[in-house]
Image 1 (cartoon, helix red, strand yellow):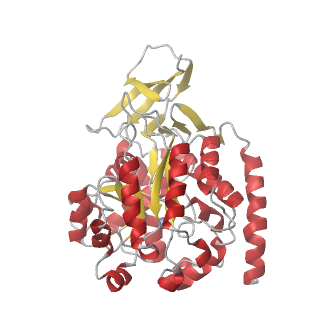
Image 2 (cartoon, rainbow, N blue to C red):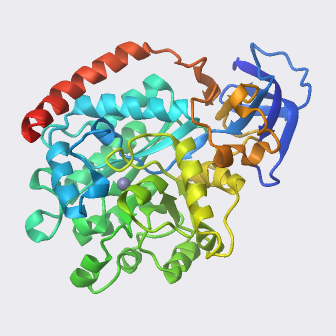
Image 3 (cartoon, rainbow, N blue to C red):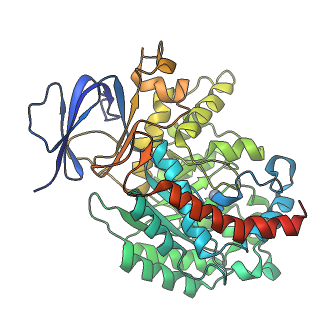
Length: 463
Ligand SMILES: [Zn+2]
């Protein structure tokens, strides 16, 4: 028998469904991994009852771009992104990335996942492209271990860089792999972890890091491999590489990718800062997605995407935190408000801004569409029970309750959510991650960070 949970008497349930339904004073019944019913005063018996009086409930947030392995470079004085040129930043950050081993991957992934969960994220995609002799070939396996421990739904991007520096890449040689090595590992990971069924907790996304740092064959072979395996693809695109691509190939990156077939409903890209309105149309017509990461755009001084224009062109938009080398945190609640503020900043010159509720839908339904998860992204019977709850009877929310749909992105939620549920399991409540000794994990992670990164960094940079 599947476990049933009745969440009772929520002040509002913002469903993000196609009709934008908001249920007031309603209950939500969960059976196993999925939502069974939503409505007022449900009389169904349940194994567990959760009192949601004074709370708003939202669909779980979906993060579509991150680099968990970077989480232990947060607040590192030597990584001063705003005051460094991109080449300076690259040369410094790659010295540090080369120190990372698979224990750092495990604990930094746990740390980022914990931060995501505590801020309402229920499904995370990560782009893991740090492969050296120190990390070995098992970073994604270590991440799967971490995801299982915390109960987060995890889509792993297996990244790769194949072009050596001598041929124009910005990657240090010991972070370069061959296309064959990369695809063989994708194949291994798919057979071990890729579950395409509804309510799947883990999937694999082959994700060459960026066209500029890979051979052409890497992208061409990835397309062939992924279409055969029926898995999605991801890469960085339009983040400052177009000039190099035009010089090298005589075309902009999106044209280059389109020519190789790396475009379509099964492809999404990170950033797209350099894309033109014509290119939005190309992506929209192909039903490809863009993961918009507002924090690195601000920190790195990149353009603020015209989100409404992109939506109008048919682009599937979703939100990402991005890695901690360009965002010292993993809160999508924070990213949502920042993204909305950025849009507002340009609203006069761009003829209006998207609403805070639109931003919530981008972070939920948009993320689900991007990852190909029609079982997620909204609160409806038959969908996965991924949600978070905010106790809005607390003093700081007083006077904000006019509109549950707009609340999150407009006023911001700066602390933790009050409960996060993933696949019908409460993974975070009462300020605690469930089923793990959080302080013990933090202690172990800090010890790994100190040994592998802090002490060598201090010695190296003489801080
Ligand atoms: Zn990135």
